[in-house]
Image (cartoon, rainbow, N blue to C red; front, side, top):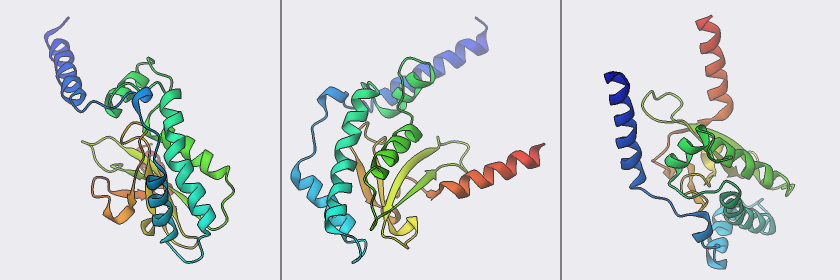
Amino acid sequence: MTLPRFFAALLLLVATLAIGGCAGTPAHELQPPSETEIAALAQEIRSLGPEIAPEEASRAARVSLEYPLRLAQAYEIEDAPYIHNIKVNQGLKPRGLCYQWADDLEARLRQEGFTTLKLHRAIANSESALRIEHSTVIVSAPGDGMYEGIVLDPWRNGGKLYWGPVREDTRYPWLPRQEVFARKRLQRQAAR
């Protein structure tokens, strides 16, 4: 092994151990959400607008909190999200990258056929060379943009849903997914 490759491997090992210190909860240890948690998210969704049907807000809350726990089992979550990403990228785990969590949660929510809720997709860190891109689902009132909605992020805590208003999620600078994809297409075309 050459010296540069040795240092690269060493750096990867140190980074993995450092990130591993933020260990996640294994899927089999995740607790189901309480009825209080479901009611709190349902109330937050209902507060997005008077046109939102309480029954739809309750269903959206239940699916958003319970379905990621099933995904955590299917994805074989045992580690913190960043460590799991490494395992997925190495072919050691089947799924579990953030966009896969978002794809699967969005697909499950769409099965509900909501008429008084709107789903959006967002990406964060797409303009940063130092931070990994992150994808999520956002729910809003019909007619509202994603910035008026609530982030539904199952990846961040490895199956335990993070949720909160988009504008208050200071950890991630969310942008509409379509906007990010359009910018990347233009950059690829310009590079040709």
